[in-house]
Length: 147
Image (cartoon, rainbow, N blue to C red):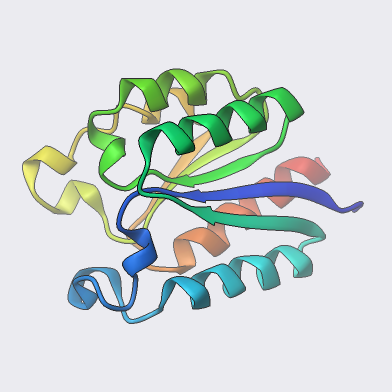
């Protein structure tokens, strides 16, 4: 398979991984997660770029970039998942593969986390497997790109 670019985009508070509620989000740091994504991508023939922001506007801009360049996206939108219609609208413009990921299982948590406003515009969703959710998402993208 030829090398394809994939953006792994992370929303608010994900830069605090390893420190923020490790009983829920694990002990893996954001830097370790980024390294895992890049290494997994390399194994799958993907060129992975990992980004994180606490800014909704910046995340929307990155999705516009992915839409314009037809780049597949793995997205952990964090809290924006539950209420950002701006993010949903930007994500709906991405015609490449899109995978929503979550470290924890939002459906098994507080009620406000049960609704994903972005789920209806992504190719698929993976949650509840910790950092392995990202590995599974990249594997799914690689498999679809090979098909």
